[in-house]
Amino acid sequence: MEPAFQTQYEKVKAYDMYQKLDELFQKEARNERYDIVCALTDSLLGNGQAASPHVIKIIGLVERLNVLGSGVSKELVVDLILKSLPEKFSQFVMNFSMHKFELSLNELHKMITNTETNLGKTKTPISSVLVVQNKRKFKKKYNGKAKGLRKPKVTKTVG
Image (cartoon, rainbow, N blue to C red; front, side):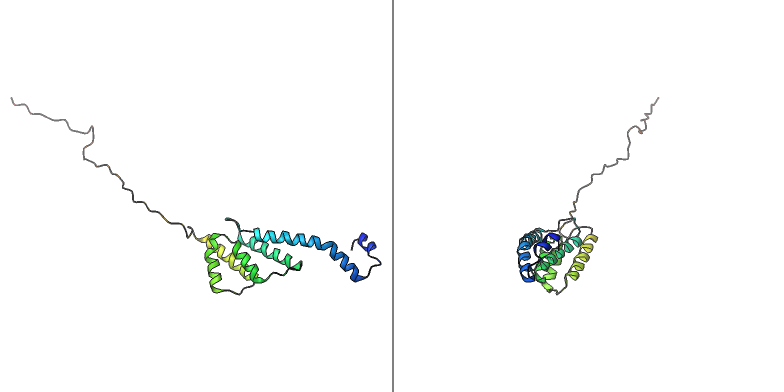
């Protein structure tokens, strides 16, 4: 405890001291909780960003909420993580929802990281369509005669 607080609460009973300190710091906890919830709801993984740090960030924010006394269910955390993933993870999210996996947050993190590496290995995106054009190629026909290589006509004279 800081010296200023210590001298102020020297002759106060423990319960009363706890109540007064709780009142002092409750406002800060409320502001921090609000900031964390805003960060959670606004966090979206952008295209081109790595998924691993994003998932770790969300798990860290949830752990801070738990420390502040606002318990968040594991199912809600999983839903927040899945909702924050970009469109390229749509197949993973659908598969995860269909099979109703019961995973820890670390296992979910590992699955998302593996999916990201597998998506990176494909050369063309799944949603892209390969367009093939059938263009005619015009060829010049060769007559067998080239300019300037003609033999001069020889005419016979009788006489």
